[in-house]
Length: 117
Image 1 (tube, one colour):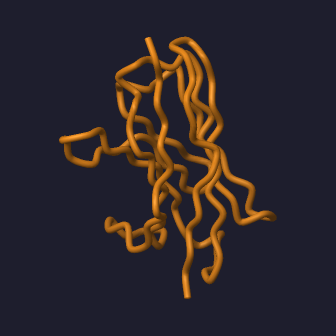
Image 2 (tube, rainbow, N blue to C red; image 1 turned 180 degrees about the vertical axis):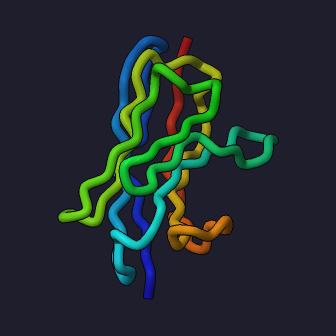
């Protein structure tokens, strides 16, 4: 059974930093792209970042502030978030898709990030 478990969310002031973690189990981690998405209240879930092999991609709204990384030895993907803004407030989800496919098949339960002004 595949599980993705996020952690590291919380309340932070604008300009602060947080690091989210997502621990994966039940899959061959190195064969999957790992991504981060977020959903603000009343809005649809949106792409934040993805790491596949050595390549990364980011939403324009987080470029230069967020960094995605992964540790295949620990089956964990991270999202370092710096210079946080109130509009970054959302539930953050990690997700996995088999490399070479477009659909994220597995999702975590989410972790809340709240940025106060």
